[in-house]
Image 1 (tube, helix red, strand yellow):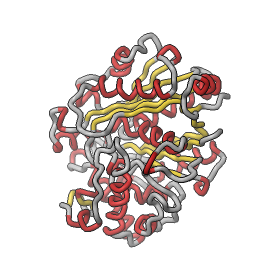
Image 2 (tube, one colour; image 1 turned 45 degrees about the vertical axis):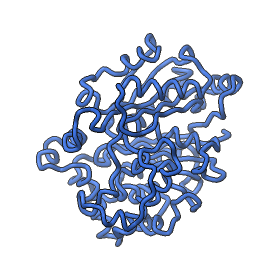
Image 3 (spheres, rainbow, N blue to C red; image 1 turned 180 degrees about the vertical axis):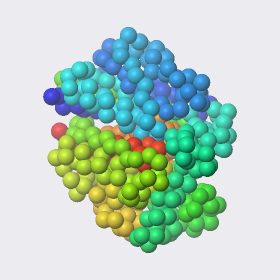
Image 4 (cartoon, helix red, strand yellow; image 1 turned 120 degrees about the horizontal axis):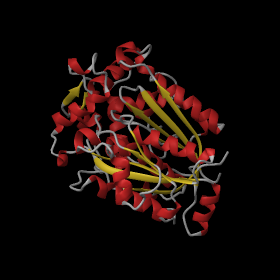
Length: 393
């Protein structure tokens, strides 16, 4: 077995981009290769995360198209689709390919265009997003993802007393973090009052409880020890070890979940990742997690074992998950402020963790960060991947 490392990382700014998909991904991919001090000849496979190319771009066979654009034709190329967890699944397969010895170095990343620059307005894009829900039981009644996570969060509020003010504190925290990230879509700080005064989208969520539609791309190079050493000798920054990846699936549809607010797949995936890495929640220094809505962050911090059930809301309100707190969550700004281009989100979380674990995050740097965790979910919490990375290993 080989020790997988992330040896290069790159991404575009998340925003509304009037650029083709290939150009967006090419920018992130070239940045990752440059960061690794490697050329395309070192890459033995390419795994792409893209969830909605068929619906939005009228292009479903994207992996070889993008490989051709960046000079990687001739190697195995594959596209992965798992809703919002798409490029996290691609990352898992890259890690497994390197770990097993099948490939020495794999380029893995994701790209998506989800803003009106695609020609689809917010209502049309919301409809496209809803295709990740059950086509017989949920889509026909008009359920969309603000409604899905609103239901989960309402249940959590009923059981544990989580408040709208605590939800708002998550948004305020992530916008503050986003203001420190030049790649974030929303770099403006906001207040609790602004969140609570914004329009209701789906109870209990208001506009500022929801992440934006985004365009963007991200990419990383996953490699074995030998390639990592070569990259370092050629001037690359510190390689970051991938110590464990967990992947779990919960029941679909949402009405059949045994405990909807528990996000069971996150608990299962976290347990797998912790076991593989030989650590527990208390060993994690920095977290990038899937905060598509403010309530989703609170549920995730509990499911990942950082707080007991019902403590996630108070922890956010007390500043425990803010930069300088006991466990900084989403120092990038998260989906809420950094943005959420579906296929690019998972590997963008890895990019942020690599930046943090190298000590290169500037104003948003988590002090003495050695162990980072990424949590990414897809659909109505049905698919979840959790990855553990470590510096100096």
